[in-house]
Amino acid sequence: MARADYGNLIAGDWHTEGEAVANVNPSDLDDTIATYAFASAEDTHAAVDAAKRAFPQWAGLTPEQRQAPLEFIGDELIRRKDEIGRLLSREEGKPLAEGVGEVARAGQFFKFYGGEALRLHGDFTQSVRPGVEVEVRREPLGVVGLITPWNFPAAIPAWKIAPALAYGNAVVFKPAELVPGTAWALAEIISRSGLPEGLFNLVMGRGKDVGEAILSARDVAAVSFTGSAATGGHIARRCAETMKKVQLEMGGKNPLVVLDDADLETAAAAALNGYSGTGQKCTASSRLVVQEGIHDRFVDALSDKLAGYTVGHALDPETKCGPVVDETQLQQDLDYIALGQQEGAELVTGGQLLNRATRGHYLAPALFTGTRNDMRINREEIFGPVCAVIRVKDYAEALAVANDTEYGLTSAICTDSLKRASHFKANSRSGIVTVNLPTGGMDYHVPFGGMKASSYGPREQGQYARDFYTTTKTAYTKP
Image 1 (cartoon, rainbow, N blue to C red):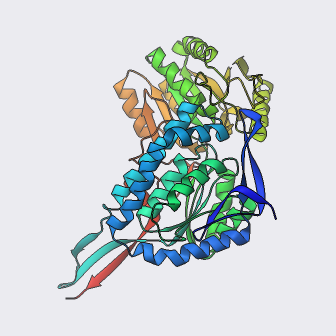
Image 2 (tube, one colour; image 1 turned 30 degrees about the vertical axis):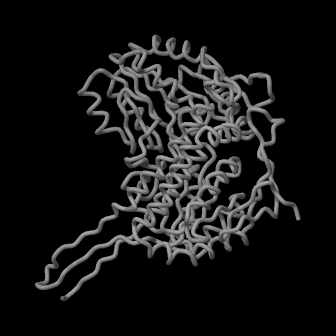
Image 3 (cartoon, rainbow, N blue to C red; image 1 turned 120 degrees about the vertical axis):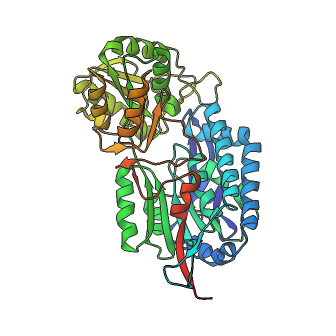
């Protein structure tokens, strides 16, 4: 039986046996980072059993006892942000500065929820019946399964794991197959934080093995998932079979509205942010809805910025846009670029493969103009460095186009009009709205989530995370 360099954490022990899968650097396809053990369905069920056994002890601790491990994890992530951030960028492909920043943000999540462990409140009130007291308390769910994507391999696991633990739950964590290194580094820190043995388990592997085992396990009380809408729908249906609580964060086709009165530099910078992380963000602005009076100047300004947007190795400090994460995603991006041209859109810049000093999945950021909102490149999530400009006559048309999508995660407007900004915030059909800011870059202490096909279930992040990771119990007492 093969042994990997790094293994899964199950019931407090590291398991390196089983299938050993190579983790390859998308910036340099000749660079294998390490091999990681992929878990089986049997391994996953063992992790669920371990979490179930450890749960009562953790749930019975005081809030302060739950706070201490979370503070430890957060402190170490922040202290080691350069080291782990470099690993993150090496395996996922985002520029080094973004990788380091993401690890620091992951640490902030753990420290925030360390505080939340002390702030879990209930309610005490009088009954409508004389002499009866009513107490409403929040209690943990039990074992939760956390399934995370590859595009934010530190931040998204952190914003799920931290509240799950803070509110007293046990965890079975399945990271995306493409980014096991960052997941393992996080799990290794968690393993030394003082949690009860088996409370937190790492099971790396494929969705058809590990993911399906989590969904089928009757001792898993809830599942939180971030990923594609198609997979999210499947998870919702599977969770319904065993009455699991479910939380889904899925895709986006996020509009950035630019009105004639917008500051041109602000608008172009906000649009450029949609290409950060190689456009591989559910919050990226992929539809640029631009009023006709500023349209041409905006396209020129954004094109100029893209001309200086260096595409290169993720660890090169000059890089602004790293490689696409893998061959499958790269081919999907290329297919959509070809489709946009077939649909009649004009490819203003980018869209071609690039050669660099190392073999990698390098793609020049693409910008389309002359597009309609009914084109597939404006309806379907591409998840790459591809944006499309839609020309509109006025604010009313801009709002209608912005809302004309099955998704509703984030939206933005660039304008100097307080009246239109206020109207947009109230009438944009998205869970997150920004004004004169990019559609990406959210704070960690406030709720995150969308509408329509973008989200399902309670919100993530901030105090609102307790609505998913706890349940309420109402107790009546006659003294």
